[in-house]
Every structure is written in C-alpha cells, then in structure tokens.
Image (cartoon, rainbow, N blue to C red; front, side):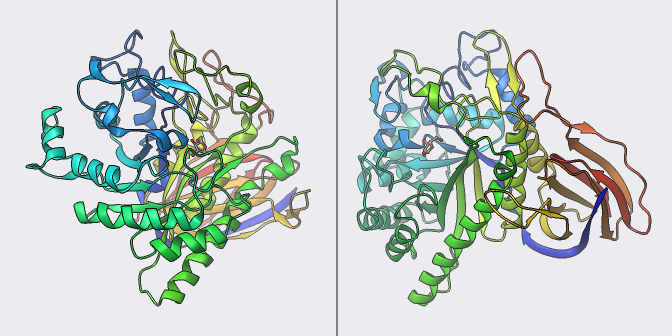
Length: 498
Ligand code: AHR
C-alpha cells in the first residue's frame, strides 16, 4: 500500500478562524423560502409557519450567518415590499427567476426565523435597479435606534429594538449580464462607493462587502476587481468571490481537484487587493467574503424547461448531491480553512432545497443531502485557529492538473487549545494510503469520523440515508503519532486531545 505522512505542530497557527467561515445563504428562489423554511400548512410548522424539522437541521449545522435575500433576486427587490402588514404586501414579478414573489416573507419574518435558528443575518442591498437612497433607508430602518422616519416605521411594524445588522453586501454579481441592472466595473464601483459611504454615515459600525467577479470564468475577471477596488477600497471591508463546481464531463479525478481552483482563485484575488492597497498607499488590508460556493450543475438541464411565472415558486436548482460532491465540498472547506487569514466570511450556497444540504418533502419530513456532513463537521469542529499540516503524499496526474497530492489536509485547534481536529481528503480514487499523522503534544485520539466506500454517484433521499459518515476504529497513539488507513476517495475528521 502507498504511504503518506502528515506532520502537525499545533503551535503552527496560520489564522484565527472567523466563525462566519461556515455561513450559508438563502435567496428568494425556488423552494428555499416558500416550501423550505416557511410552510404554514405543513404538519410540522410552528406558530409562525416555520418548519420545525428544517429548523432542527439548521441548528444541527450551527450556521453562524445567513446571506439574504439574494443572489440574483436582490437586484430587482424592493425591501419595503417585505415589511409591515403581510396582507398589504404586493405580488411582484421576480425577473431573476421568472417567478411571482408574494412577499409573505421579508426582513421581519426572516429575522424571526434566524432568531429561532440561532444564526445572524448578512443582508444584501439592491444595486441593480436601485441605489444610494434605498441603501441608506434600509440601514436606517434596520439599525437606527429611533426618532426618524424609517426607524419609527420599524417600530410601527412591531420591532422596537434595531435589527443591528452588521454585515451588508453592496449588491450581487453586478458584472453578470444575467443580473438585473448589470454594470460595468466603473459604473458599479462608483455606485458601490457612494452607497457604502452613505450607509456608513447612517451606521458607522457596519461592515460592507463589495462585489468581486461572479467567478474566475468571467472575461473581465481581474480587471473588474482592480477597477472596483479603485473606487471602493477605502469604504469596503470585504471583496466577494463566488464559485460553483461541476462535473459535467464525468471526470471524477479532475473533479476532485476543484478545491485547488478555489485556492488559485483566492490567491489571484488577494494579489489584486494587495496591489491596490500598495498603489493607494493604504494600511487597511482587504478581507474576502467567499459568499457563494458549492456544487451546482445537476439541475441545470431540467431547470431550463421550467415555464415562467408559475403562481407558486417552482422547484428550482434542486441538485441531488452524490458522494463525489460531498468530497468536493469537504475539499472546498479545507481550502477555506487554509485561507482563513484573509477569507473571513464564506457562505455555502445555499441552505434549503436550492443547491442545498437540507431538502424538504412538501408533505413529509426534511432530509440531509450528502454534502450536509462535511459542512456539519467543519462547522462543528472547525472553530478556533487554523493550523498548518505538512503533507507528504503520493501524487497523481489527471486531465485538469498534474502532480496533484492525493491527500489534502488542514487542522483546527479549538478555542480552549485542548483539542485539534485534522480534516483529511483523499481525492485519489484508486489508492488507499497508509498514513502516519504526527502531532506534537497529542495525548489521545477522541474519534475518527469517515465518509468512504460509497459509489461515487450514490445519493441520499428522504427514504434512504445511504451516504453518511461513520466512526471508524483507530489505533492508539504511539510517540504522538497515529497510524491510519485513509481510504481512496474519502473524507476524514480525526479529533485528538492535546
Ligand atoms: O445561488 C444561485 C445564484 O448563483 C445566485 O442567485 C447568484 O448570485 C449566482 O449566480
């Protein structure tokens, strides 16, 4: 059997991890809100119409922050439509997803849901059809204590205390031709800078995320970031990145290297941020918000056939994830943790029914997709400080890359400093690896959780949870070293007492 070694010095901390690295995203899209988190007629709905089975799964994931209300949706959204008397709210055409939005759920209801889920809110403002006026008004509505038109309107709507929303996105994917009100980098940069300035005048405690490119595939990638930062660097705190993985070619060996593309993407964006910083002679360091990432491709073909303007939002972007997708999500989490020094926020896109770890049956219960598990592990055991792992692994070549390490790994020391979790992906589909994990100061193995041995295309469903993690027996430590078999194509979480 081929061999690998992982060497870990728990003192070799690379970054403090912001808990928001394990954030998620909910958009008014398909069955994310209506029929997802909110379904008053469902047997498990609570007094507010929220599905308690969904809430239980969101709480299990311990989601720290949720980006809302979009996505492409936000670029045509009037936030005023979603506050106040529900019976008086207008139905509108949602041009982003060709649906009718009835506005039964808006900021008020969503915040109530978040309170029940124990998550924070990251709110995106509409810079597609709207601008400075809307942006300043919603900050006043949400965050100003009182005594002004919009803060008093909030009180009239039954919310005395400000929502105190800390993090705000300055629009969404404004470079994309599919975006309502898409803009050039100059147009967006100027608008975002003016909105940012005024939003911070209303509440100087807020943080702002400027839009980076919709993805590294955009023809304007790089030039967009440079120009947008030219205008917004002084005002924004984060620049956004979005990335969706796919395996349309059915090439698993290449697919399992997708997190390395994410890593390259992060490094390229950081270089641009730091160049602009140097050019402007500023001290402030731009942080990143990877506020949309996931696998998205299984549903594309069937979604193209959905008729426009259905009276209920149709099921859209309902990717059913398989085992290899779970491995790609695990790898992506490793990459995010490795870059936690600069990536402070990341949002798994999305959370419920729409390219999501949590799915709902309209009548029966909620269930966990394969990708639920690596996300759960990272959110639960990935809080604290990121620790470098020195990986010595066999390599392989595939269509996408050459000399790819079979093993990818990062570790996280918990905040108390008495436990370290090593996340390990074996992205090679042929070789089990006899692996030595040497950890300075390791006292005892707590557990080894593993997802392995499944068919790459195996999926879960409401009726059957086939792709699940299990605890595997592991040998005792010898001289602070653990010897384990890391099976081919596997996701591993090794927890150790220090
Ligand atoms: O998450 C689905 C869509 O992907 C979002 O609405 C958009 O921002 C991105 O293109």
